[in-house]
Image (cartoon, rainbow, N blue to C red; front, side):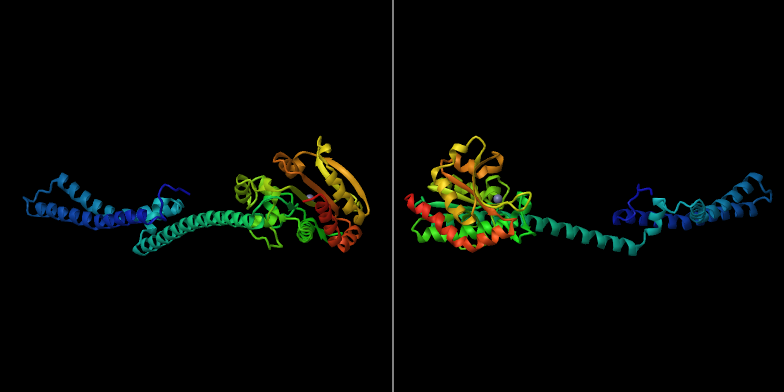
Length: 363
Ligand SMILES: [Zn+2]
């Protein structure tokens, strides 16, 4: 297809429309002029001295022939184009398309397209403004929640680990429900975080859940924010995390505890462990061991302290960096149904046992 002429554009069709009309006028006018001239020649011959000049005769015949040819040219050229089958030839298509109706139709379509494009631009700008507004509001909510929940600093910061939920696609390493057990890590970490907060508060220990602060709602049970994702800058709440960091909020706590639930290849492992980064085994404190022992009393197996790769324990590294002791605990294996069923029965007791360790340490 030759695209030299944009026959589906109204401006091009308008040009062809004018050209078509000019040709049509010339097609009538030129033969008429030629015929009139031929008639003059004829009268000259007739009214002359009777001697018909061969040259004049030839001229007369030529004019008549030209008149006929000019009149027929468009018809002939159309026939030729038709025979050699160049129906796609843009110029001829333009001639065919160049009608008042088509021009009006294309103009209407062009205006419609332009209007839609303008609308799309406007809604794109509005969406950007809305997103900026939402992001700003998230930061404000988080700041307010932080101010209300922990005005004097100190106390325990609870982090529901792997609490990604709506942020799965952002964090990339969200773990769903394990079909074999019916348990999901993110749900269990949130659930225990709530139990622990309540247990600590009832022991008179100040306690805040980081995920609630990030979402800006200290009553939220959804806690749909990934603390890990936020520290990595790939959470919806990354700006809220940053802003609170700037205000020194995260380092205002005496201790952080990050709750996780484990999984194993065999899906039969059970028990409790605390984790540190590789080379930081010594950072496992007496406090960690006491919490580990308190939880293991209920899960039935103390798996000790495990040093994990640095990248994998980024939150551990983060709190270590801001000088807040952190206990990173893998409470139970969420892919082991019988172990989890047992854990669920003892969830509140486990929360209370952890709270008591903090209480005894004078938090
Ligand atoms: Zn986890």
